Image (cartoon, rainbow, N blue to C red; front, top):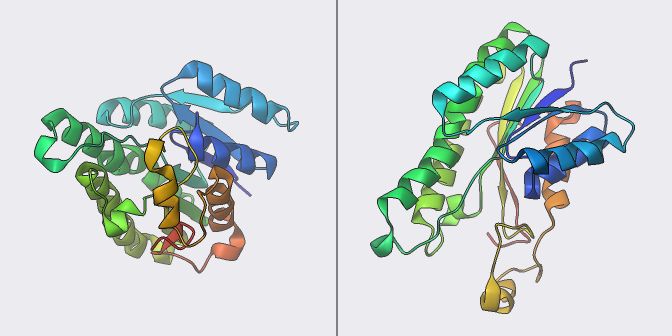
Length: 241
């Protein structure tokens, strides 16, 4: 069985947690990011599991042609069984104060990457005529919105709509497409500062989640047991919404 899985944005946070968990489970992970040093560190951790050193792809997911070139070349090493579209950024600001670059950079990275990454790899997945998995990392912000995150919420809501549409197109081909919508997860992107205690009070579970808890769901959605689960948005949020 082909167990080759591309994870975008896998140098830290949720992407790194997914890479480590999947590698330990026997998947052949393909790491992606823009920081080679950090990616090499993740690759070294994976090697400790006794697996071969994973491939590392360096490109900007907001760059349509750059992504296509790198991904097309990498497909010579094998079709992907799974893709976890995880790379993303935040540029928080109230909408009235939002600069054009803060809007466009978030949309380009978070939403346009759906096309930039998936379009080059999709037809090879289809031609393989084998089951495959696509997991899109959305956010609780894409479901309920969040103050100061109109750009981020728009990008993550857009991912949900795109994923649901793609899921319809691919369901008969045994390719599932699902979204994971994390809530507050303990990563470098989550800097709550002095508001931490107040925000935690709004979470029924009364805590911030761990990246590996999101990775555990990704592992399940990649499995054969999840073959009848598609077009879904699954929250990992401690009951926040």
